[in-house]
Image 1 (tube, rainbow, N blue to C red):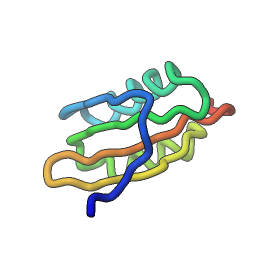
Image 2 (cartoon, rainbow, N blue to C red):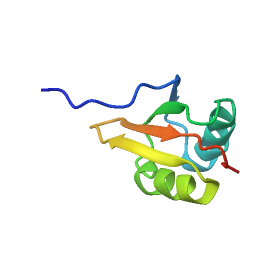
Image 3 (spheres, one colour):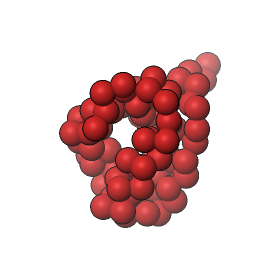
Length: 84
């Protein structure tokens, strides 16, 4: 049975973007969402496994789910009403 993930309001494929550039662009993408909406992020950067959760904690976003992959990881991130 396939694992279920939250329904995203938007999906963004960051490709092989490096983490510094990725988190800056990710913040912009999340700010485009309404509070409570979820962004599905697809990223190839292996450093994202540590950096994305830390970014979410620092910026007030919620990492709802994470799915590791061979070459790409998927993250479901909710924009909260008080996100900075």
